[in-house]
Image 1: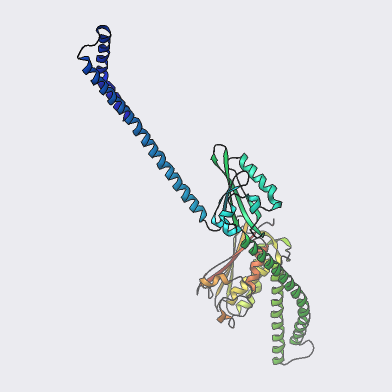
Image 2: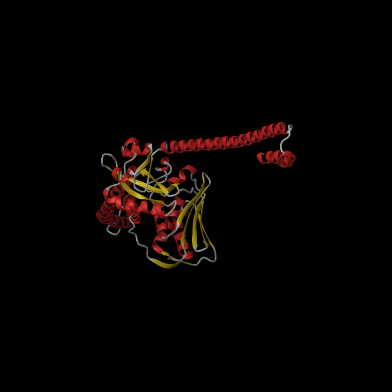
Length: 444
């Protein structure tokens, strides 16, 4: 706008300038004449007016620039104030700003709270005088030097600082360099107090040690008690079988029934003891698997045949569905049988008379999937998470109706995971339940 005005101004005066030049040339030749005084006054007025206009434009430009600069400075001060307010009010993050000589220039409210020094006490002091322990000063110097050598360098790690009382505070500290002038660098340090986290870590470690000690004591107790219980229990089972079979002398039907009940209860109790020991071993990582190549169809058919006499009594049908490509798998034969026994036995327990149980098996990539389906009582959706937990039964009202300790499924999960597999459940309450698991075809 100013340049355009000047161009128009000079173009308008161009003719006047030519006329003035001719007039000066005439004065130099012929001298002044009476009319020249008036012309000189007019010319002087025009020059004064032109000069005043130029001065006005320069001053206006200067004023505009001054106002712009003042606005920018005000905005900068506003942004600085907002930034400082933001940093001051960041909760639980102590922030300090200091130069290459460690002299503190900035100290936020969280620093006052964490270290006990007020802003007035801290500003002007050195970081090494305030919070950096003597044994950490070499590392602190290294960080300052590296921050100066690398622009925008950031370093972060866990360390220990001191508060005003000399107490150690574990912190996570981060350092960053910010250029504040052409040859100056402000270093900002930010810390988060780790005291609570360290306390929780210590408590967690102590809890873990207590749990491990308890687990060790439990395993030791169970190993000792298993011997003390199983020895007389085997005698009870053995002698009750002898009495029930009439090997010593003939018994009445009532006596035989009593002897048979003793034997059955003894076997049941022995099974519970064995399950508890197996779970304890698996949880402690002391159970070892003996891998061998076994025929999947053979082991499934074996389980089905052994379970049919007990299910036929209630007219429960057990069907087997095995894909043709299923052959050998590397697994612990005894443990795999135990898994299938538990699942099929569990299905039979919760299936009503005249019900159906299906054992399925198929290969999925490098895994073998097993499923046991029944058309029994099913499981409510909210109860599925309770499964596979030791001594857990999903319905307290069913404890009397469906005998069991709640150990079978828990042991299944432990044994499957020992094989490197996983278990799953699908069910609709009142209609069906499907318990499945997968194990690798080849042991790695």
